[in-house]
Length: 508
Ligand code: 5AD
Ligand code: SF4
View 1 (cartoon, helix red, strand yellow):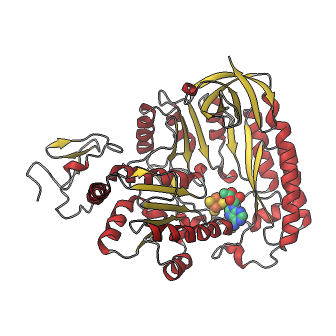
View 2: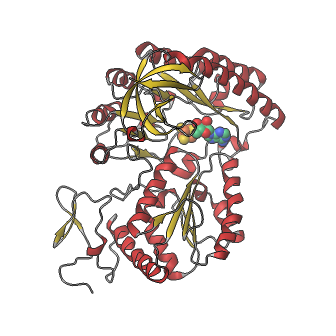
View 3: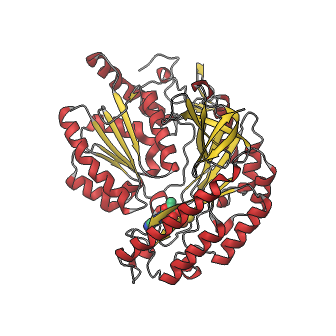
């Protein structure tokens, strides 16, 4: 047992701050003091304290490794898929950092995590493709732990296949178990066999875990998890579970902390942010959350993703219009321009309603940039349906569109639909759509040329010595001559030349 001043189970005080008797530790996300945890006692049952305990346990293993090898063990995380996964990976890295791992550049590491995506078949194939490579690395480094997590692991068939054919994988966990990385790693180290933990769903949201941000000046912030929409092609509601919203006070607390830490831009993340807060007690609308977030002092830019057109409210348009901080960009997935296909997709809006919404947004915020997602080759899609999609694309003039070939996902309603479209037809439509989208994009993206705009500088420009790259409020990239010291700062840039998808400018 540890000495008397150490208490194994921390408690929450009235402000929800974590403290251990004998030593108080406020606002801990990234400054968890693992030294004050008694690792010889039983693990706490409450979260996040249970995870802090297992972080301390794993750290013993890390220290032992360091003693033997003269260096800290390395950890590598590869993220597949969307912004949600990217944010989850930051949480995973945050936990690993607390434990004492050093971040690696590639898979030659003691712990390798693949945070997987399963939204389209291709994503799954890429993961299987890379597993063979991991196996060869593991043969050279017996200390190596291979971890698979994320959306693909929520599919029972996938887990069965890995258990059977990829025995060298060490840990598997699902989207609801991200917060348990330390606990599962410890279990694997103790039991020395494959550890699998995949919850089908959950009500819980574990707050106050450490995160390791990829960028010092911008960050994603989850506002909700899961999706209730069940678009008929989409596997997300099955792998991410039902909608759960975080409490506004938790979100604001996280953002305030990020701002204190140097963040100037945040991206509010949810599968369908427009239905944020419906299940909270009392309910809170997304528009009202945005208003509160916009009040955070020191925060300069707010983005959000993704908006479902079916419940984008007038209030939201009003808030966007009235706040300078909210970026002039809206990602509004269309999926199809045919009302008949939209109905089969269970999207709950018609082509006309989508267009009406676009006009309303453009009337209120004329300089907004609109981007979208479009699927071609949904079961039953005819040439006429496809022509309607092209027509909407021409009418809306999207700044850019992510175009996808329909991918059949087992378990979704569309997977059992008849009249799947032949591959050759789909490919041809896809090429035609891409051509159209790119033509339009090249025309509309240049509309701000010869104006002065605010740019958040994000990185050095790979293509030009002495150049930096930043983003306009409407998300378009700008390259201009500048010092590395500008990274993370918002500066005024005159847009001298439009190159279609980006600008060349000069700082003024
Ligand atoms: N096939 C093709 N594209 C899909 N998407 C989601 N599910 C599928 C699927 N089964 C696309 C949608 C969504 C984006 C994130 O991925 O366009 O908006
Ligand atoms: Fe999938 Fe539709 Fe939910 Fe988006 S809104 S995650 S497309 S089910």
